[in-house]
Amino acid sequence: MLIDRLLKSVDRRPAAQSVCETGREVTFSQLELFARAIRRIVINKTDAPRVGILLPAGIAFDAAFHGTLWADRVPVPLNFLLSPTELADIAEDAAIDLIFTIHHFDSLTENLPVDLIHVDDLPIRRLLLKARLTPRPPRPQSVSDETAVLLYTSGTTGACKGVELTARALAVNCDAIVKASGIGDHDRFLAVLPPFHVFGLTGNVLVPAASGLPVYAIPRFSAAALYRAIAQWRPTVLMAIPSMYATLLRYKSAPPDAFKGFSMLVSGGEPLPKAVADGFRERFGVNLLEGYGLTETSPVISLNTRTEHRPGTVGKVVPNVEIRIIDDQGKILGPDGDGQIIVRGHSVMKGYFNRPVETVSVLDAEGWFRTGDVGHLDSDGFLHITGRKKEMIIVGGENVFPREVEEVLRRHPAVSDAAVIGIKDASRGEVPAAFVSLEKNAEADELSLRTFAREHLAGYKVPRYLKIVRDLPRGPTGKVLKAKLQLGAVATSAEAEIERAESSTSGTAAADEGQVGPGCE
Image (tube, rainbow, N blue to C red):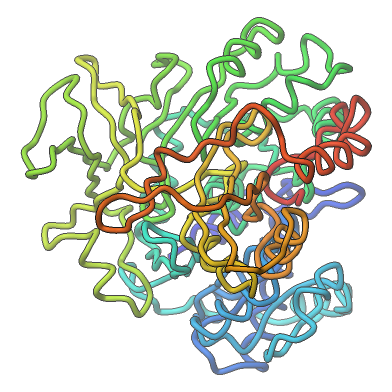
């Protein structure tokens, strides 16, 4: 079903630009040939039903993704911000024995017990020529409600789990995005989100492919690279997370008319600070259109658009998605009533891979998915997000769960216990802060504990601040009272040392370059 949508674009616009990168581009016809070559490799190399893709946004990812679908396998986009241990856990959970990657990620993949296909080693010209000289392979006879893509997320409990998204779910959501936003034949996409995120996958891979529209991919986000791409390529659609927009706003050399040609600047993945939205409006004369969604909903639930935009909200519900606001007893609340947001529709996930208990805990028999987010609908139908039931911390668009970080810190021989909370951060929205108590007579300092955490966690999960305390505040049952944890106004010596080290490389010049967010750890 998803490969059909690409092939329709190929038949309609074979010579049109498809995916572009710095120094290279492919037409829709060439992308098809590349996908055919990947299909043949998958069929020859593995019988496993799922194939890993560890690639940045760009031509290779799009070809590997569609080629895997064409081979009637399930692509598993892999997060290149994770640690080797975390990637190995995902490969084992998904039963992956083949991964498409590049040598840039050798440090992540060198010990994985899988076959690796390095795209940068492939004889691309020869493979494309061979594909051109053979008939178009048949489309897979897949069912629209079978799992089409497996995306790993921390979900609602912190445990790493695969979200099973069907071809129908992704197709329906793509169509809803196009219909709600008014994307048309004139639009050109600028991709800065990593494609292992459902936001980047749907918005910058599936929507352009199905619409026959070009996308210019920046594999590693920086403000300088993005502004160069705008000047050279004149895109009209940008989807990014708020911390990226904050970086773009701080870039001193940006011309005031930089975003004049854009029809859509969509913000999602984390709450959009009012200061960033106001700053874009005042400096560039454009509105950032905030939306809301989750991996489990393919992802878009609601979206502000050019014609219906209310600042401070995440817009109106997109077509083919139904939402309710319920209280703790499950009662449906009316306008302005704050409660948990639940969602139903074809774009809701099939379930968590091999996790039936966790699936039924969030997805009921009637198809309602409990998001864990708190909000309300106003009388005009705009959705307001007001809180989160879950403890998840969103760091530059990446989900971090305190329990996962706490468990790593507790593995340190000097640590007795640990508690992690999220604190606000001007650059990334939120960052983890850890409070650690030590074993009796044990010795450790903040810097050594952060170093230990970095050895076992992705960079964005490592506590930005870490404070050693005598005891953690606890309630009568022994539960840590996180509401009583405070960093205090004075940084510890380790924090000050970290601040000095980072300021030496991320001062005015680095801020002007603006590397932040997914892909930049």
